[in-house]
Amino acid sequence: MTLDHPLLLQAYSQLLIQLEELPVFLRKTLAGLPAEAWGRLPAEDGSPLLEHVWHVHDCETDLYGMRIRRVLSEERPLLPPMSVSGWPAERAYHLRDGEAGIAAFAAQRAELLAQLKRVEPAQLGRAGVRGDGTEVNLLGLVEQLAEHDRDHRWRVAAILRGYAGL
Image (cartoon, helix red, strand yellow):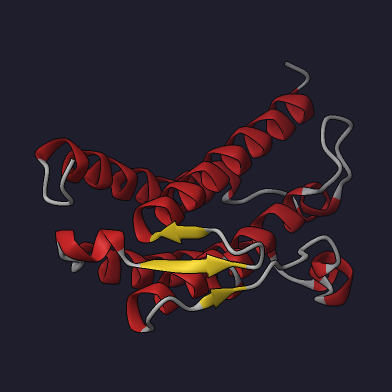
């Protein structure tokens, strides 16, 4: 299948639509949440809502978004592994504001989407090299980001269901 195949382009278009959804979901579901709820450790999840919001923001700026930008601007960049497990403590997520995190994430996502919407079909095959030597192309990185979004969307919804006693 060539990079300009209609099915491939349709799949890419659908991924971009999915990427547009997480900021809207977070705004609509978490707007006006009481301060206590942001930091409450849920029974269903190891991370409070505040950590989810700042985690997706930081993944946008320092992980997936950065990798996508590098693949678009560099020839076969090295994409070393990154440990994100320490971010909540290192970056003091517990001291941050949740609604500010959503706004910052939405702004970062809008910038990334603007760049991704300008991608030409031939650019979908641009690749970076992971630390283990395997390649991942732009389309694969966008799919990884969309999967990451789906995971956090599901987890946030599960936390809210738990808070509601459903």
